[in-house]
Length: 178
Image (cartoon, rainbow, N blue to C red; front, top):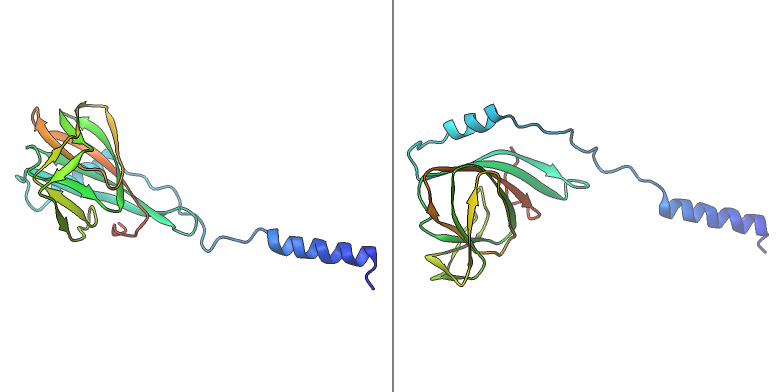
């Protein structure tokens, strides 16, 4: 036979066990800083300085509770419009235009699509010769563009060289930590 006080103790012990604060599997990472010098050094470390596209990951860190995903920042320099349109299967991207401008097409449907294997900077996805029915937008210094996984995108025109940061959100552990 339970006494009221015994039942209260059992219930409170059970609730404490269910709702106790359990330490995370690992403490959160300290803040990570990236300086303009880090960005420039990464661009200068590209093997082919004359390439029409240089896309260099600067930092990729674990994020979220227990390292549930990764976030990274890359610096990109383009001197010509894209030859292909892309879709990333697992990576969301945010562009922040540092200098230059051009025409970015997003959405629509890839033309002549072909599946691509995982790349160290963007993971697996699709490549096509162009985009049909996408939205054409002019981007300039200071603009921010969100491109979610599964969205076709490509620069079709540039005013000259363009430089931008790409923040990549990776829930599939595609990106290598750096």
